[in-house]
Length: 113
Image (cartoon, rainbow, N blue to C red; front, side):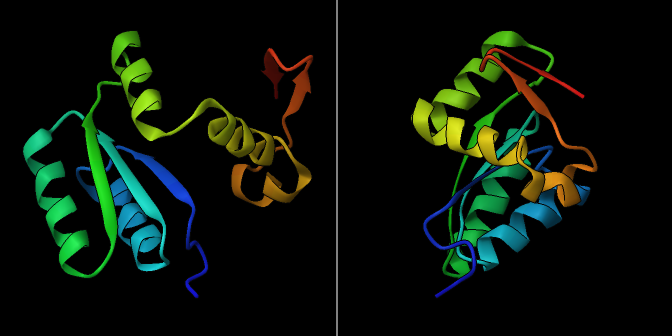
């Protein structure tokens, strides 16, 4: 079984560079990858590449500086409880090696660094 089998990986900036490489790694590890970026043509190409290699991917054209785009991206990614699990992980000590900091939840509404 792949290390990320059954998990969803949302990757912003996925149309090139580090974002694209990250998406490719998650897909190779079995994750269902959701690609987000402004350049739709590049996203379509990357989805095709991932699927051709046996992975699962979808995309949502997103400009993270536009609130409506971010809302659409989150809705495309999964159910609220799935997203909450991911955020809970990122706030945990287990994720501090990824984020470089342990985030402290404040009543479930805000995070401080």
